Amino acid sequence: MTDAIHHFATDLQSRLGSRLAACIVDVGEVTIEVTVTELLEVMRSLRDDWGFEQLIDVCGVDYSQYGLTEWGTSEASGQGFSRGVNVGTAGYLDAVHDELSTARPTAARRFAAVYHLLSVQHNRRLRVRAYAPDDELPVIPSVIEIWNGADWYEREAFDLFGILFEGHPDLRRILTDYGFVGHPFRKDFPLSGNVEVRYDPEKQRVIYQPVSIQPRVLVPKVIRDDVQRHGAGAPAVQDAEDA
Image 1: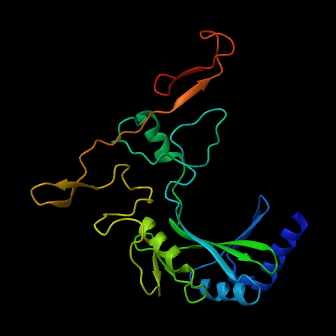
Image 2 (image 1 turned 180 degrees about the vertical axis):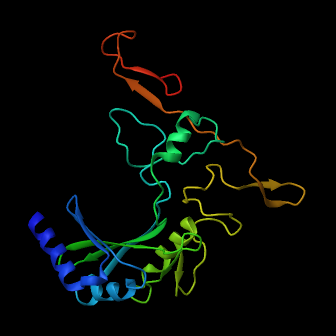
């Protein structure tokens, strides 16, 4: 299986050539990266010439905090997900603010659409990633003309990440309400949101108002290797602020 995957990746690079920005083989999966200008041509070729007749999913990604973490340990990896909190959030560790600010620059490209393709006839899967060139107004061509099933997937990515899919015939929210403010899967979206809803007995209807709850982030627990004070077999657990 591994040889077949590498052969498939090599064949992709050979036949698609300069239209590919990158081709990666990792954990037994192939991921290719294309620019938005080449996206539709490559996608049409993947459907017609490579037999990827099914679009399984379209996912939005926000890479703004990619590779940064709020705390580091001797065992935890330095890469991965961040809690996405900020200095003003309760529970934030102030000591790590300067370290996070200078640790690594944020990703040069923030928003991307990731497409998961399936070829039933060849029993093969492929992941395709395309970055939006503009972080302020992320626009990526819609692939709905190639796979009709992209309709709701692209609406979901627009709703949650604010990615605009150019050429989509009905790009509007699909998961959040009509009065929702912002895009909840963006890394800079507040954990408590921007607005809340409640029933107003005087107006006899549900109304929107600014969020009234105080954002709060739970401080993670740290399991220490030192068991002298707690006895063997009982891991020492304490707040990260006290560690």
